[in-house]
Image (cartoon, rainbow, N blue to C red):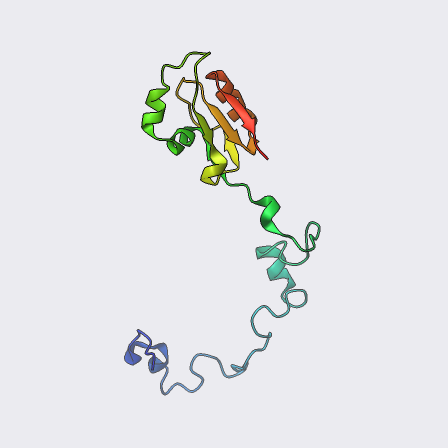
Length: 154
């Protein structure tokens, strides 16, 4: 048995005891659901309320997409400021003073479950090869600016 939090003696209807119509008037009596239950009549007798306070509630927009499988839309992203966190700090220090002809680290973001590299944040100024399925324009520009390369994977 679930009890409501309010004590019976505080409820409004205790105050109404002895007053015949309990605040609902004698002439236009308190009938069950004179205008329908819930959202009834949104396109009929409640139209003004729906148009005024909930514009665009009815109707459709856009095209239908039959049998939409979400696989092709699955594109987890990672920003440039987080890319170096995928490899250990030791790796970054090891290649910190790599010249243009030396070996540079390869960071494969798809191994970490990311498909697209976005260009937020700064990269440490050391060359790096980043492998991903997609790169944003900004990310590509910043990686190349530090002497790195973007490698597209399937």
